[in-house]
Length: 424
Image (tube, rainbow, N blue to C red; front, side, top):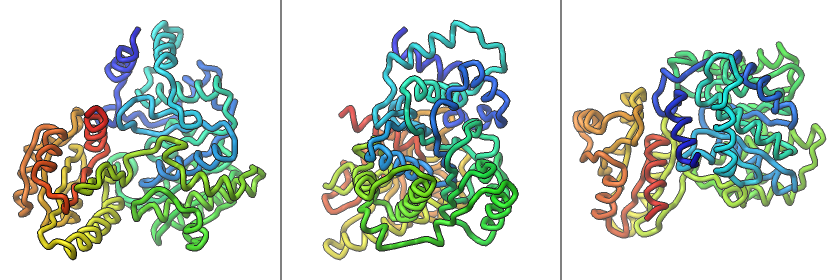
């Protein structure tokens, strides 16, 4: 079996939420527990840090993993979705699982022997990661929640620390239509007696977290009440988006809690982990500058909370560009998934920008023709393209060195862009 054959089989045989949406969502822990038993409960062979949240959980997971690596520990990192290569989902000390190990896992699984309910794509790939981490004998594994928390398949673990970055509206059809309901689902990772760190909270969500922590006797730290600008600045976090300031603060507090429970983490490791996170873990796609002429940025922010940081940051950059050259233009290559509530998102985009509307090459993508029509109806200047590569090529062709090109709207738009960009 070749690697592509193995991953094609995974994508074809098992429903993948990120590609097809609701049809792939299988809430509940029964299948994960049965799968885990089949593989000998690999998650019991390493110590975990569990990270949930609407936005920022990937960034916080990578920062924590990078610092633990810098300290000299062997660290597993499980995140989703992947951008370019399926293997990005699981890494040990920044190195992706090998193609051979993916093939061996799939071949072993296809031989049978498991008689439980058919797992989802996420459940089986999670088990691939957990099993690999056990075989690699990692000291710690940082595990990012897929969706929600309470019923997410990763919630079979009993971690050393639970972290919830923030709460905003996303996946409301599964997690609830109020912030308090969504917070309640995310709070499901807070477990009996295990410390928890909350990155951000508001009037609606703070009581939910406090009540859950009280109910299970979990020591609670509210990172948003421990903001230390000087300490955060001193870490020189390499992640550049404005929203990363809160993620850096959350990660700093989470790491201080790990110190508190007895894990050795030096100040030197903290500084190296924050300043070298991309090198240490291979993290990408978050306010990534891929070219300086014209300035070209891609970012996976795709909901109101993420875009509420990205759009003002772009406006600020554009103001600087226009002070140097009044003709500077903002060119945006964007697309969304079909179940995205674009009516609430589109008003956040700047009307003066030029839009290159497109779609990612996944079944769940919103057709570019539909998005083009909706944006034209709202008075945006836009043109449509069937692929991200074509949209970006046109934006690049029309741009001057003073312009800014932004690629985003969906994780999968960024994934398509990076897939093509890296092969150019």
